[in-house]
Length: 204
Image 1 (cartoon, one colour):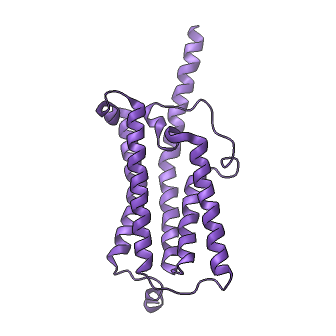
Image 2: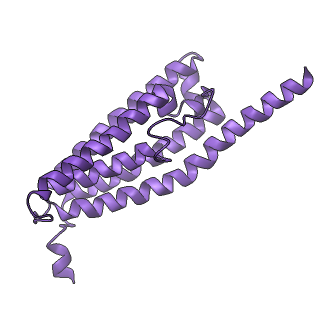
Image 3: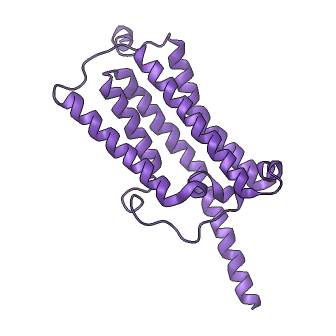
């Protein structure tokens, strides 16, 4: 069992450890930072009370950390055992289709939400007027996370690294856990706004 596992993943590689840590760090850190921002307005105060500038700064941090995570994943893959996963021509077609679909979900969801909608603007008090219901949100509930997971899988298949598929499963689990915290908290923010708007109408 141990020998078969070692044939698909080399657990001794520091690059793998760094990759695993970065995957867990990103959603965990942003959830902590965003909740602190909602309660204490720390980043907003740093930017002189301008919530939008604070959100743009956090967006830059999240985007940069994502690039670093992807770089660490790529480096980790190249140091893992290589093994044919799919027969030709599917070894090329499947990862290309997966990657294109995944990036389509990521890019179109970012376009639909905008910078503040994508990068936790609601924690800064920058709320959207209406729930986005067009593509890709009419296809998937969480298209950005699904698209990102698809891209991880596509990269693993392209480089023929079975370890990458295990990492992809880990990514998906991390995202599911993150959504258990993000979803209810975001719903609470919008529920509070709805209650406040209802109260203001009663006063009128």
